[in-house]
Amino acid sequence: MSYGSSVLHHPGAQLRRAVIVIVASLCLLVPTTLVTSAASAAGGGYDNQLSPGDCELLGRVYSKGAGCARTRCVSKAHLYRKVYGAEACQLRGQGEYGYVSTIDWRRCAALSRRWIASVNYCASYPDRSATAVYDAPQCTGPANVYVTLSEKDGYYDECLTPARVKALIGYARSEGSTLQAEASLRSDLQCQFRPESAYVDGKCVSAPGSRPATGGIVMVGDSLTWRGTDELSRLRGTFTIDGEPARQISELRSRLDDYQALYGVPKGVIVALGAVPPPKGFGKSDLAKVIKGLPSTADVMFVMPYAELVPGKATKNTQTIVGWMKSIAKGRRKTCLADWPSYVRGHQGILQDGVHVKHSAEGGWARFIDQSWSRCF
Image (tube, rainbow, N blue to C red):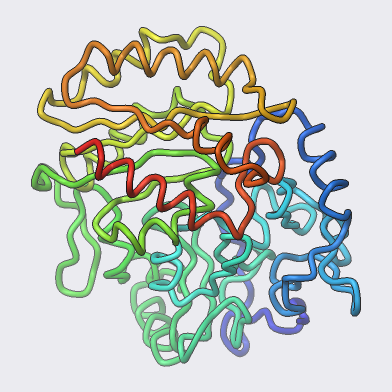
C-alpha cells in the first residue's frame, strides 16, 4: 500500500489540507500494567489473526510467519491507540487523526469504508493533506474514491464512486467551492446525523425548529460497548449503540442530549459506563440528576462496571460506581441492574487485560446485554 503515490485530488488539481478536529483517545484510563501484563500473558508482540491487508490498514508492520506487530508501526508512523488487542498507528504530524476511526460498523458500511472486524475499527485514510484518494484500500466496492471530511458524526470521511466525485467537482467549480464542501453538503447519508437538518433538492440544509418523534432505545458505553457494537446490533437491530473508548460516566448527559437532538426523548436507556474513573468532583448525585432528567416512563438499565488489577478483585473505582447504580436503581421505578461483575466471575478467562473481553467473547457480552434487557423489561 503506497499512500504517497495514491493521493490525488483530481488530475492536475492541487491538494487541499483537511480541517483538523479532535477525536477521543482510544485508551481506557486504567493502569498501564494491565495492558503490559496482558500482552506478556498472551504471547507478546504479534497478532497472527490479522491478515497482511488488515495489518497494513492499521499502520502496523506485518512479519511473515509471526503476524501483525502489536507495537511496531510502518515508516513515519507511531502507535497511538494502545489498548491490547486493538492497537493502531498514526502518521506523525496528523493531530488526532490515525489509520482508523471508531465508527459504528453499520455506518462504516454505509460510508462504503472497510470494517476491520477483529479490532472493531473503520479504516481511515491517515494522511489528512489528501482531499481525495482514488482506488483507496479503505474503500469497498465501486465507491473507491476516499474523500476526507472531518471524521466526526455527520461529517465522516466517505467513499464515493468516481462518477459521483466527478459530479461533485463540477458543482465545486460552478459554485466556487471545494470538493470537500460539496461532498459534505450533498450527502443524504450524512445529513441524517445532523441535528435540525433536512435533505432538500439534493442538499443538506438547516431546518431550525424541527423536532424528531419521541422514542427509541439508546445504549451509552465505553470500550466494552464499542468493541461489541456489531455483535449486539445483530441481536438488537433497533438499539442505537453509542460506544467510545475512554468515555467517562460524566459524559452521559451530553451523549443523551445528542441522541435526543436526532431521535427525540428515548423510551429506554442503557448505561454501560464506569470502568474509566470519573473526573474529580463528579459523584452519585450528578449521575442521579442525569437519570432524574429522563421521563419517569423511560426504562433504564445500569450495566454495573468491572475492572481488575488483581484477578477476581474489582478496582475501588468500579466498586464505587456499582454502589451509585444500586442506590439510584433502588429509588427509581422502571430501573434495573445488569450484573456484569458476576458474569465475569462466572466466566473465567473472558477478560484479556482486566477490563476488555477477548475478541472471541464479544458475542457473549452481547448476549449478556440482550438477555439482561429482556429480563428487566
